Image (cartoon, rainbow, N blue to C red; front, side):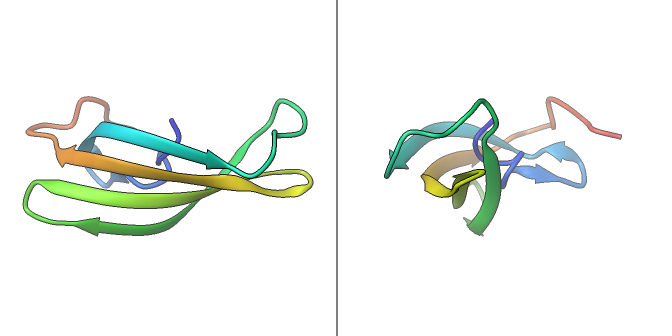
Length: 79
């Protein structure tokens, strides 16, 4: 879940459905763990875009850009 859980998780659960995810890596990740930090999110009445930074123990690995559509009802609710 590259984005959010980086960017699409809201107070009502997963509020957007990912339509497209693009990864741009500057190097291969080191190890099995990958961190994700939401960088920006712009949402309208239906579509949204967001970006996230990807990192490992050695620093930044790359970015993810996500296109999403508003969900009619949250599919997963985290409590």
